[in-house]
Length: 88
Image 1 (tube, helix red, strand yellow):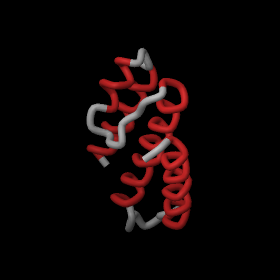
Image 2 (cartoon, helix red, strand yellow):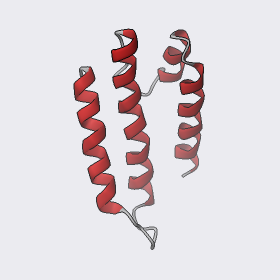
Image 3 (spheres, rainbow, N blue to C red):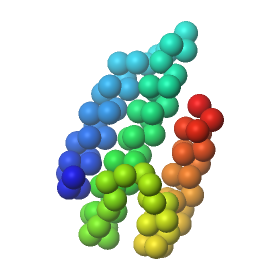
């Protein structure tokens, strides 16, 4: 997927997320967490492509690649999001 594809995908996911919110009864927690995780994943890929000319199409290895590109703060933020995802 190219940079613009990642940006478009993030917007699509955001629209889907908005349909599930608010979720006062907690019926869609898993879907909300996964969608919330997908948005920054795609936005990071978009930013990596724009700034560094390369990106990953998966979350696997994303933090390592961010660190290789000296984007340590972004790697730290994404790791925090990943931790929230695993704990739901």
